[in-house]
Length: 102
Image (cartoon, rainbow, N blue to C red; front, top):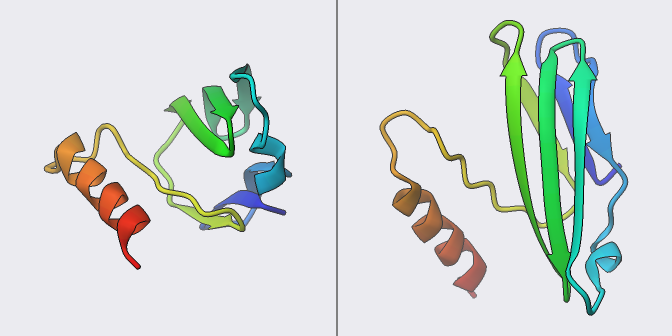
């Protein structure tokens, strides 16, 4: 599976999708949204893609704190918006460095 998010404690699948890179090779801008009600919490997810580029946004309200494990077959850059002690510019610089390193 190209993306899996699992609960670290019990390894239950929290979220997954079957997107592959070729899914995003479209000429027009595509927007998809959905709301999720899962055992760990409620979430809103949106993503936009065109010309091989995908941007996604998620907003979650978890019922209790937990640690998750991520596995992605796609090249993914995460830009957490509310990381304590780090500014969004830190993550943007890290993403640009990741994408421009040879």
